[in-house]
Amino acid sequence: HQSNRHLPHILESITDLLKLPQVPIVYTQIYLVFRALLIRISNKNFISFWPILIAELIQILLQLEQDLLFDIEGDIKSNIQRMTTSDITLTNISNGSSDSNPLLKMYLYACKLLDILLAIPYSELYHFQLFRSAFVTDHNITNSNSHIDIFITFSIRLFKLLEKKLQLMPISIHNQLPIIKNLNHPLLRLRTISNIIELFPFFNCLTKMHTNDNLYLNNEQILLSDTMNEIETSVLEDFIES
Picture 1: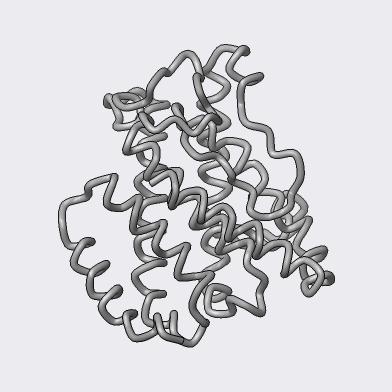
Picture 2: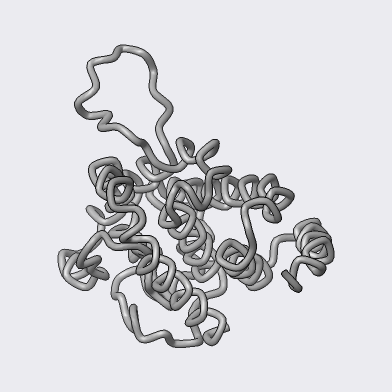
């Protein structure tokens, strides 16, 4: 593939950018590039990107978790609280406005990266399966009889924090949240967000992912084409937006 010649340079450029102080708009573009690479190059050629991708995705989700904790507990005026367009009212939540907050867009694009990592079928992305359990659970922990401590995945931790934040908000906000009508992938098709709470439906779906995985495994070949087309459309929309 002709683009494979440029992969070492792309990897070097991403590595250099990540050494700089965190600038949301730069990180947003890096997450978008990762999404494009995932659908354009083979598993074999993507191997060298995995350490950086996983490390950065974990780091940004940890940052989101800390921002939510601070926001909810009121210990400090968190980044989200400072930079959210409105803590009381959600406006323009799905119209793709270009004046969205850089930090919120960075979080949104990080979640979109996680979304397609989970959406691409197992057979097409087998290296990710080594890390999958850090992000979503593949069993129903509420029905587990085990007394052994279970690692709580990022999806569950962030869902619980967003749920707690939502409970502190006016009822009118609940009715304005984005609706994920079905569990077809990718789940997250928002172009921009004006409040971090708009990610609540996405993480809510991720906590239930184990109930739908068998469907995707049993019908993988049927779903592969439609899923990949939807993923490509989503990435293209964001490139145009950017």
